[in-house]
Amino acid sequence: MTEKYLFLYGMNIINLLIGAGYFILFLLSLHSLTRAAHIVKPQHVNGYRLLWAVIAITILMILISSIFDISKTLMDNTRIIANNQGWYNNRYSLQVIFITGIFAILLLITVVSEASSSGIFSYNGNVIRWLIVLFAFNLINSVSLHFIDQIMNIRILGFRIERCIEIAVIIFILISYKRHFYDLKIRDQHVSYVNPERFI
Image (cartoon, rainbow, N blue to C red; front, side, top):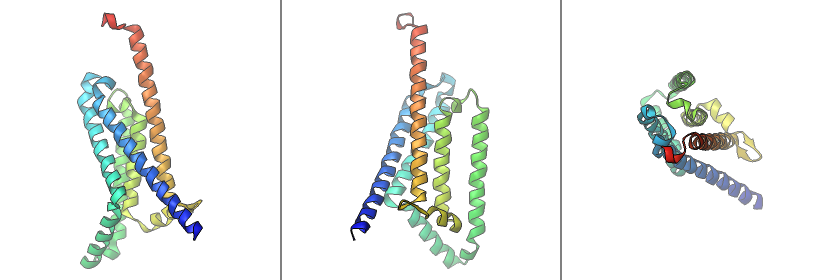
């Protein structure tokens, strides 16, 4: 009985850490949104703000979904509808098409971000790339493809691999954010040295 309570306590800690991680990411995305004029060139401000507004809204939606378990509820309702309408047995092909579409969009975004050496992706590209990975992970996981569910339910030290991957990606995003802020600090120090305030 004690081991059971410790296991449940550990799962609650993991969920709490993930929720806290998403909340921190939401705050950081708001910071990037509000500091756009300080971070990017004037011609890129509007595009940069739009990008981070979309990112902030997406993170907030994931956070709300994780708190209220909306994704699982939607999938359960979808299964009921599919069963009632008679296309439940054909859902596999639809799921594969959806996941393929996600990968195609990710590939397109990756190509655009790599080609954009002077656009909005050039300022904190690593952060955005890891955020895209996180969003894709949540989308693919929410599709609930059977063999993916089996992989995600594998446990490492008692914790589902799904949660371990999610925490790992969030940590990589936070590390990328830290590097981004460090680069901004170095840039600001260089600008202050080259252009002292009294001459601006």
